[in-house]
Length: 357
Image (cartoon, rainbow, N blue to C red):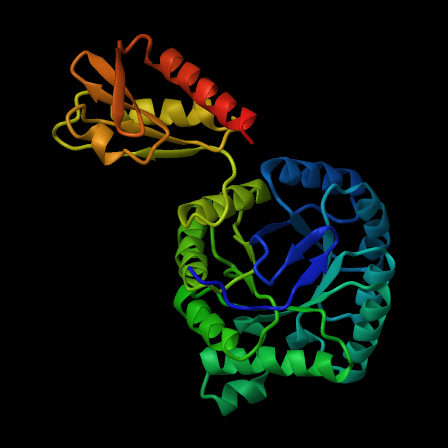
């Protein structure tokens, strides 16, 4: 898929835009003032593959804690600012790698200009994040409601405010909790600006439902070539946001991180307890460092061929499993040995691919 051409922006040691790999973000749900808890969560996010994280700055105490967090964090830290422009200034001075502001709740143009000037002096970018729930009433009335036109107009107005202040190191987001509105809004905006786009839903929902809704919206936009960095916003442990983000990226062959499991949905031909087997294999491979695709198929007749793109796989038959590599059967395995044999083959293939890098 062809990526939209956007400006290159640096966030700490991460570059987004201009064809760079799509960066995975999350947001801490700890109290920023509790620096120990926040740093522990950042380390968990980092271990999961998170490349940028964001923390809330609701007050001066949180802004002052930011400098401690930034110095100890293994990944760039973004300061999330709402309503109070002075907190943005404090966050910039505290070492934030980027700040995120919502122009819908900072309406003072002089304050925005001051934020832009301070960020420019510090050499950090700003994300102007438009949400459907905080659109200016004037735009809602002008465009007949909260729709893609009013959303895009709000984002463009925010960008123009920054540009008028001489600031162009911008990242833009235009989020809604409605997947279709989000898709339509980003499509419209991507035709009108060339700043990198932070893509995601806002208030997507719980881990299960939110991941599905996010996959629909984010996946559709990425398939269109729209998006330079993503966050899957979920009501739950933010580590699950990172895992979901990589699953979306892997499904579109945009990023590879960790193992990928594919398995058939079962049918009348299934001769093994496939759900149990697939869940066990998923558990065994979850934390492996290899970038491999593993298949668990329920039919020894068609399974290997249907999963020929997998690096390694097993297909269940009556009283035995077939072990196959890229669709070619390489042996038969008893149910008692299947996990040990499969894991041995995975480690062999994984080690070979690592050695050849």
